[in-house]
Amino acid sequence: MNKELSEVLKIYSTDTHESFTNRLAGSSKETIISIFTDLLTTYINDHNSSTLREYLTVTIAGYEHSEGKIGFNGFKQTSIVGGKSIACEAKPKNFNTEDLLDYKEGNRKRKPAPLNGNGNFTDYTLSRFKRDKKENPHMLVSGFTDGRLVYILEFPFKHKSFIDKLNKQLNKYFPSGKHTKGSFLRSANFDYKDYIFSRDLKIIFLLSKKELLKCKDYINRKFFTFLYEKST
Image (cartoon, rainbow, N blue to C red; front, side, top):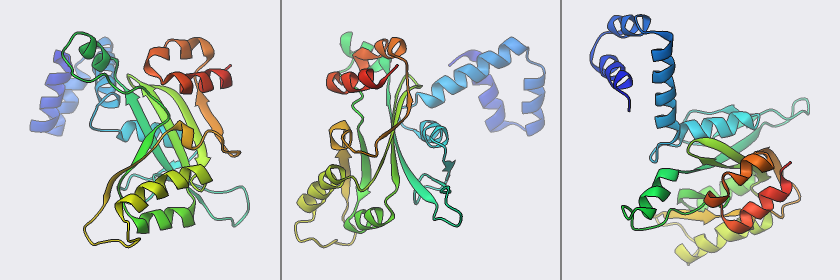
């Protein structure tokens, strides 16, 4: 984090709004650009927060982002007059190239997992699965490298191989088929193999072949081949 951003953050958090605005007003254009760039870089590449990546995924796909923590991530109206709105569930993933560098330099034990169109449902339950099948939200799976968007893929939740993958994990965790209060499947996972053959799969965003090649080392080999063939 650069010194200017550090000072501005301290003023914002500990001083008055007037002091904060005066500090920015007294800064040069170049300083403001530097502060804003550093802030965005830090925020969008943060390991522990995917809020901005989620927002970009949802809005680029044409949905209105829902900021609440509970429920779906966004909605949009259908083209049919009086039709039901379509919900979406965003699953953004980010590959931080610094993690790969740390691994190569021996500062990290495990090699970071490449992007493979994966995602997960945290603290998943049978009741949530039942709700999701009923509502059939559109899944928005996205991948970033160092905060730069690489792809957004969209498909309906009820694609058979996708729900089969989730159902298998839930059945293993809840063998009785009944939910016990306070019990959750911590992570129900999926990847590109569970949905790329959906007839309703849409490519919302994808880098050009030239730009995609720059990310080749950060993407699962077979998934990269799929993306590259779809790119222009």
